[in-house]
Image (cartoon, rainbow, N blue to C red):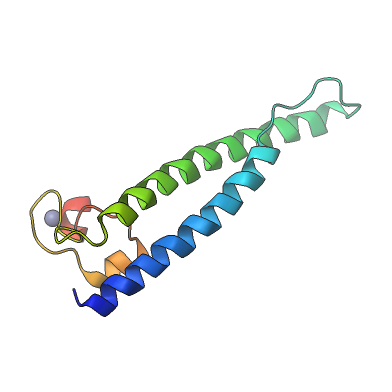
Length: 110
Ligand SMILES: [Zn+2]
């Protein structure tokens, strides 16, 4: 990995963290429990409950990814960054650019 690639990966980590923080803030709003006092019909209440469940799942996923990105940001300047935790081979730079939180190479991730 060249220093330029490392910088590019760091930039992408920071950008994705910003995006995720925005997403999480939005999801926190939409995943609030559905109030039973709301004057809405039975069907729309079921809709809102289904939507709330989806938002909750996405919120969990987003928080998990954000934590992984934070860890990646801590490690990005480390010489072991980009080394597969399973087999010790280098993780392809292309993979790290798309998924900087990856700790496994494509082969081991499968
Ligand atoms: Zn591997």
